[in-house]
Each structure stands twice: as structure tokens, then as C-alpha cells.
Length: 91
Image (cartoon, rainbow, N blue to C red; front, side, top):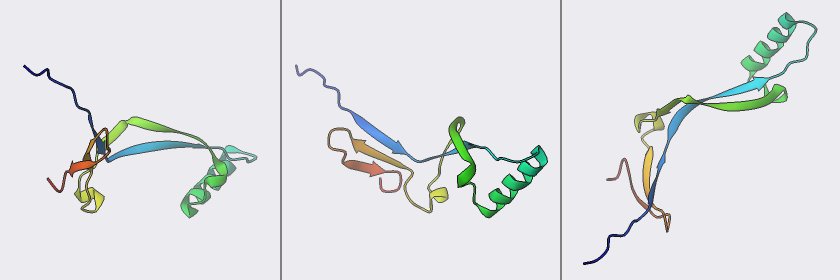
């Protein structure tokens, strides 16, 4: 009788998750700092104030194929060769 073996696979899964960024703004008062960061946020220009970030893991949600422009959101792979075996569109 042949002994059972174990074989490894992995699944890559595309998800949606919120990322919290912390920013520091130099100003003479809180109101001035708030005004500055709001302007920078609206203009999409907050790189200079960025300080650190954290992933909010509790907000993680699976992404649907529709939300991903019709592209796969799950792919199954052979762990040894990294060959993709199938995805959640092409079964």
C-alpha cells in the first residue's frame, strides 16, 4: 500500500482593505493646520506631510470579479513551480 503524500498549493486573493496614513502639518494653530491639510488633501498633494501608515486588517473584504474590471480575484498555484492552475474566471 502506497503511503499518502502531502502536496502544497497556494491561492493569491485580491482584496480591498483600508490603509490609515498619518500626516504631520506645521502651523501656528490647529485651525491653520486643518486648513492646510484639507487643501493638500483636495489637491491630492499630501506626500510632504506623510509620516507613517498602518493596514486596518479588520476592514479586509474579498473583491469580486466585477469590482476588478472583470479580471480574476483568486488564482490557484502549484507551490513548487508557481504555475497557475486556475483562477475564478477560467475554471
